[in-house]
Length: 161
Image (cartoon, rainbow, N blue to C red):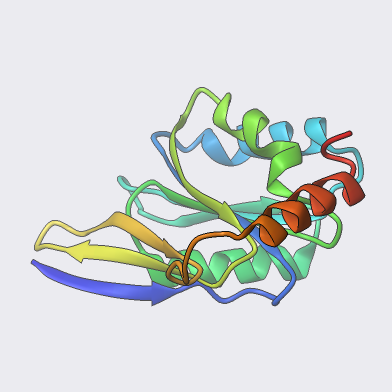
């Protein structure tokens, strides 16, 4: 078995959702979940089929984001892996529950704007996702000032009152 790390390529300010699903219907159902959760959402979606022709299936509301999702899916190349690249103003917090409720979705590995590496195990059968590296390592414990800043940020974004 070989272990490798595949970096996800994305615009610096873009959010992504990485997950695992179990059926070709994933592409259409995740698409419907996203457009139903946020009207006018811009995104690209790609899904790695794990049997039959083993194609990367794709859809989206933005051609450039869809192409980028396909390129990333091909780089990861793991069966039943999917990637959603969200466009400007779209955030995982607004769509994540809708994505997780799609019957084909088995798990979500991460939902983030951070740099991400997908950890891949490769055997003679194929490739699988072992996990992800999401962002950077912890630098320490938050101070009282950090707590106040965190709370203020959430209120500025309208997530808390």
